Amino acid sequence: MTQTCQERPDIVLIGAGVMSASFASLIRSLDPSMTITMFESLESCARESSEAWNNAGTGHAAYCELNYTSRRADGSIDMTKALDVNTEFDLSRQLWAHLVEKRWIERPDSFIRRCPHMSFVQGEENVAFLKARYETMVRHHCFDTMQYSENPSEIAGWAPLMMARRGPGTVVAATRVEQGTDVDFGTLTRTLFEKLRDEDGVSLHYRHKVTALDRAFDGRWNVSVQNMQTGESRVVSAGFVFVGAGGAALELLKGADLPEAHGYAGFPVSGLFLHADNLDLCQRHSAKVYGKAAVGSPPMSVPHLDTRIIGGRPYLLFGPYAGFTTKFLKSGRWSDLPRSITTDNAKAMFDVMVDNRDLVRYLIGQVLQKKSARFEALREFYPAARTHDWRVAVAGQRVQIIKTENGRGTLKFGTEVLSTQDHTLSAVLGASPGASIAASVALQVVTRNFAHRLPEWQERLKTIIPSYGVDLRKDEPVCRAIRERTGTILGI
Image (spheres, rainbow, N blue to C red):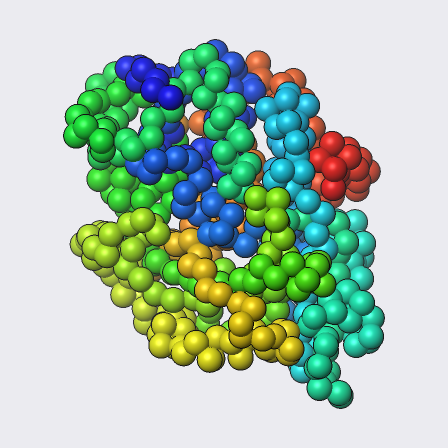
């Protein structure tokens, strides 16, 4: 479908992933008169990290991801990050429930399903950590449905494949939350952009690459765009720019010479999964099971054996096996990383390489890892795994952010939202939890950059996000009520 390009839209979206789809859905729910133009360099939406085969689809709620909890010096468990991620996922559930009621999403089961979330560990030290984690978390209303077991028979009932043929006497433990989810972010993104396409005042342009961002004298942004099919270039004037372009965001921000982006750099991490489509095998495992990360590995590399429903069909995925590449996107260029290094961020990158030697060694080891070693890692989770059931899939590209703090480069794990001081541009940077907290990102962008509209939007915001203005980490009755309501609407 060919659409006329708006010359002066209120908002320009760069990138057609779940972040852009979520922000556009929220802003149009708040003000349907806002005009939006989207530019995507690929031929359709959700082709990079939002694509189901390119991410874990966990619906990150910190139930199973051990990297969101850590031991303090006194031995106690810090679950601050887990609580943050858990309640940020609640924001996504609320936005999706609103879009179901608005009939932007006709069938929530096309993208989200109930799937238990489990953590699984082996060895006495890891078992002690998991038990302490459970005892801390289960006392909080956000995690009070969590179950814990060291009983191999009980764990076998939760995850039969993982306990079959496991050696007797092996010390194991697991936690389980029945209310976890599997999310197909690719289907969700496509559904939202299909609805946006039919909205008055919204134009979507694929195979259009944004080549530059320049501030105009009137306070707007001149967005230079090239039609990749015809070679034609044009400039669009935007009142607000949202950069949801994944790994390509950093290059655009650097090119715009934003003071807020000074000192930033990117550290690309690639990945592989093993996947199985044997229906009998897939039906014998119904859970997302996360283990303990290797020393020095990034959070996105925590090993997990996942039930996935993609295109309505079940699969099993195991991985990821992390690696290093100089591309910032799966469809990117090998020159992405070298081109990103400037006098502004070279020191920060050097600092990170020095301070994260374990990570560098881990990634080199992963790159050099043989196929047989990958399969042995799977057998740590699933001892009876057979090689002929599994094939390799290339995961999406992630770019961890390197940020200069207190004069030194720091590798940041997580998702960050960068906004300009004049509130005319926002960009999403980083990786996990990523797509799972897209609604939280969208809400941050709205509250930071459209503060002058918030008084008139208060009631609408509370309709879309009923917990707006409420801290779900502290307000137990509201938290329980919202989870019951969104669970019913979403069928989970």
